[in-house]
Each structure stands twice: as C-alpha cells, then as structure tokens.
Length: 285
Image (cartoon, rainbow, N blue to C red):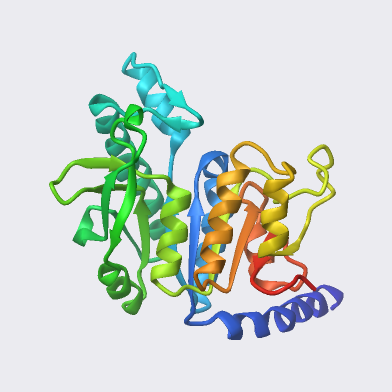
C-alpha cells in the first residue's frame, strides 16, 4: 500500500510538467561519453515522446570516429580541440556518424517501441554548410543555412528525428559540423522551448573540484561571467556558449545534464529541482 501511495504521488507530481511541455519542441544533443550509456537516455526519450513532447535528437560520436580511424591506421588529429578533417577523415566521419551511430540510435529507439527516423544535414537540404574560417581544419564546416521543413514534417507525424552532424555546402562538398552548434541552431530555427546537452558531467559547478557544487540555475549574464572569469574550462566553454546563444535567440531555457546518470533527462524536465544546470533569460530565482 505504501509503495502504491508513492507511485501515485510521483505521477501526480510529474503531471503538470507533462501538461506544460506536451506538443512543445525540445532539441537534445547526445554525444561523447553519454553515448556509452545508450539505454539511460533512450528510455527517457521514449517516455517523453509517449507523453506527447516533440523531441529532436542531434548526435555526434567523436569517440567512435576515433575508434574507426585507429582501425584504419589513420591518426586522429586535433587543433584547439577541433578535429582536423582532411578528405579521408571526412569519409570516415560521414560513414560513422550518418551510418553506424545514427542507425544504431534509430534501431534502438524503434526496437523499444518508438518511431525514429535517422537523417543528417544533407537530407532535404536540412543544413547547408560552408567551410570554417580556419583553413587548417580542412572539411570542418559552419552552418550557412537551415531549412527545417523535413524535421517539421517528421514531428507533425509523431516521428523522432535523429540527426547526425554532417552536412554539405551548396556545391555538394561534405563538412563535419560541431553537434553542439547544430543542436543550438536547430533549437532556434524550430522555436524550441528547450535545448538540452547531455554530457558526462553534472553541469556547471561553482567549484570545479567539487562535484556537489552544482549550479542548478543561472541567467545569461551569470553564464557569461562564468566564462569571462575562467570558472569553466575545456569543452564546457563552447557548450555553455551554445546555451547562451540559444537562449539569447529565443529558446526558453538551455540545460546541461549528465547523460550517463539514469533518468537524468526525466528528472531535469519533469521535476522542479532538476538534475543539471539550466540557463534562462531572466535572473535565476
């Protein structure tokens, strides 16, 4: 009887959040270490989709790319944290992201009862890319245009778009895109209510040496201050910049959560306390 009471309490607590976000678009970026724990995130995606949320899943797959480059006796090279992508590396990137990783995620979602469709930026001219300003990076691109019609059709028919961060320029040249940037720009273009970055850290910490010092809420200026005061470092800087950019351009909130923790996505969206860091326009309460 006590167990039943607990179940009822949980259900009644999450109901207002389900009602709030039903039929709203939420873009999620899924990659890196979080992808090693597929089922944690996929179970949450299926639950949220079943509750009527319109989910768009963007993924990278850097570790898998590195594995395949190693198998092919090709060294992975980086410059300032960005992958140097020559033509041979680009072939591997596209095969791994748009092929292996994308279809594994789609198959897993579909096998568990969901409805997923795997695409990349090339499909339907979803993303038109251009070369980045740093020529030494090779076929690393930036986003020139986004044409979201294909995603809108999929969402309208209750499919979950699963998007690999590969695109082509107007002349058909393939480019490797930063998946965080893709997620942020898609969230802006789709007028999403939230963009969520699933990573392998708990979020933004007040003390980088203390995992318990999570900052659960901050506004745009507080997030900018964290960067300017060098209180975040490494890969968290571009991720936080993506959060700031998305919110400044109209997304209601951006979240950074630990995708390796079971049900962190549900707890972030369907509870008041959440489980990660949330960046909003107004001052954090």
